[in-house]
Structure formats: C-alpha cells, structure tokens
Image (cartoon, rainbow, N blue to C red; front, side):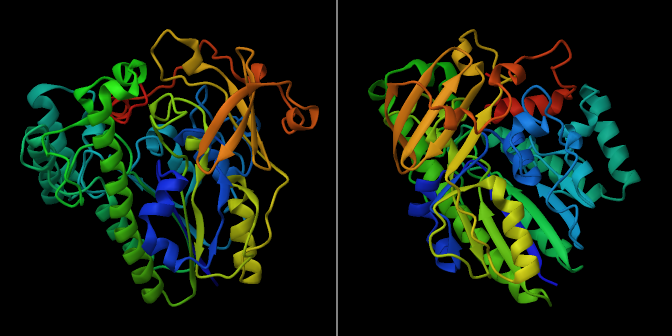
Length: 444
C-alpha cells in the first residue's frame, strides 16, 4: 500500500518557491502552477487542507482555532497510520492538533532544538527557579533529562547570541522534523504530515543560510507597525535584508527537504508519494503588498506551491485549491496516479484575525475572494468589492466593481455571519504559546 507524505513549507509563496527551490521542482512528477490556499494564515488553512472545506463550513478559524472541532479529515478513511509533526505553534497541541492523528508531536521550531525534550511551554505556569526545577523534574519523569538539558542550554545560548555578530546555533526546526519523520516512517503504511517553519518570520541570518546579511541584523529591529506604515523606499535596506533572508530560507528548505524525500523513498518498503506545498505565502512589501508577513489578504498570501513526487498525473491542472489535497491523496492510494482536479473557480476566505491588537479594522475584517481565470474578485465586511488582474503571485491594480452573482454563489453563507467574534472567542492559550505566536508575528 502506498505511503503518503504531506510536507507543508510554512509561509512559502509560489513565486519564491519557483525561483529558489530547484531541487524539489526537479524531483516533481506533477506540479500545479495555479494552486491557491483556502485561507491566509496557518490555522484555517491547515484545517481546510485536512477537511476539504472552507473555514466558514468547518468552523475552525480565528474565532474558533481548535482543530479538534474538525469532524472529518481526508485521512479518516485511509488504512494508514496517521502521523503529524509540526514545528509551528499554530499547529500544535495548544490548538488541538493532536486530536486529528494517531500520533502527533510538536515543538517550537523557532526556539527549541528537539521534539524529544520537555518544552518550556509545559512549565509556563511557574517562574524563576521553580520553573527550572519543574522542568528538570518533568524531564526526569519522562527519562529525557539529557535531551531536555541540551534543549534548555540551546535556548539560552541562542538568546544570548541574538543580535550579536555570532550566528545562532542550528536551524528553525527542519533538522528535527526530518529526523523524527524518518523514525516514524519505520511503520508502514503511513500518512505523514509535517510542517516546516524555517521560512517563517522573524528573520535573522544563521550559519546554515547562504546569505550576506549581517548576523547582528534582526527583523525585530523595526516594529511591525513601523514596517506597515512606512513608505517602502524609506526602509529599503531593511526590506532587502528581510527578502534576502526569506529567499535564503526557502533555498535551505529546498536543500534539506529534497534530500529528506530521497532518503524517505529509499528506505520505505512500499512506494512513498510525497506532496510538497505551503499553508499560505508571505507578503514582502513588494509592489501592491501592504504588509510584511501574513496579516493581510492577497495573492502573495494565497498562491502556493503544490508538487507531487513519486506519482504521475496531469501535465496542466489549471486552477487548483488546497481543498483538493484529499482528492489527490485518494487518487494516488486507489489508482496510483494524481487525478484531474482542475476547477472553474477557486475560493478562499478569512473570517477575521483575532490576534491583531491594532485599532485599524482593515486588518481584522472578514474577507473573501474567488479566482476565475486570470482575475481575482474580493469583498469584505467593510463594504469593499474589488477586482484584480493576477500577475503570478501578485495582485495588479484594484478596480471597484460589482461582484458577479456566480462568484458570490461560491459561498453558501454570508461572510458577516461568520466574521463576528463572540464573548468566548478568545482561545485559552498558555502564556508560552502566546509568546511564540507573538514571535511569529501573529499578535501585533
């Protein structure tokens, strides 16, 4: 029975993947050039990828970021052991992700060294020396004391090195994800999901990256508000450094993940088919982009790579959505090839953005979009109705238009009905996880 590996390169936009991931593209048997994510940030996009429906239907989004509420995933009916691994705090036990898989594990790839160590998030309810005593006690109870002490020293040393001329140790989780994935692949057949967060902000240079950006430079040298409000030409050096490190991170992922794919396929007894994609892209304050990160809603955030390695399929699929991942997997498992999945229209939405603390309602608005041919229609809860001509991973100039009824009819409920936080919308997230989300740019 065919093994499936679904590898999500978090935050990797399609145009940068095309330019900076030659190894994975060379390995690909099928490549979908016009694939769009169902939402613009991790929780709703992953949930839709697993469930095959939009956030307004499955209900997991900013106002209910709980994967455990997904009633169905595409791998429920597979006769495969499902394994989930994540270096992203937004795909973790804090958001109920463990409920979806037979085996699940996560760690803070932007901070920590290993899945095997006790996470400092588990002792977030204590402070001072009591926190370290509890950490050591838990490590002893689980018989992972050595790895946990290494993890703690790794974290502290990298904290000291941040902002200095000496690069931090390690990467942002790719090595640990790959090592654990290879161990989990020993039991076949498997459905392996893995999230790689190395291309996610904040940005800083590491020894493993091929970049000339100074090691002392860090994207936190300017606040998100400053970057968002500044004219690009006034912060040109900052933006060039950010983009350079983002591109270098995509190249690093390309190198590591391509090597992992070859190792994985070589060591499994059954055929192993690998899908490489992204949950969303990233805005880089390029022309037409308002933000640096993924708090906005645009083609830069929705146009994602989608390649299949190890199975033949259509040469040109046309418009495609990550909602079709389940259909692709079922086709591979049942027929040994990637099915035709072209769509006339592709829809995406973001009911809101709970983690934004600013006052401008533009950033928290409910928003929807539909791709039709080379055009993108967008409308939101603030009354905007726009039409864009698409230029690869970028939007062209916006034109105010009436949204055609067939386009609106792609959604069966109004955006206003789901874009309303309730009194209990604020999720119960521990302080350590919230700190990690803030580091990742989710709370401004």
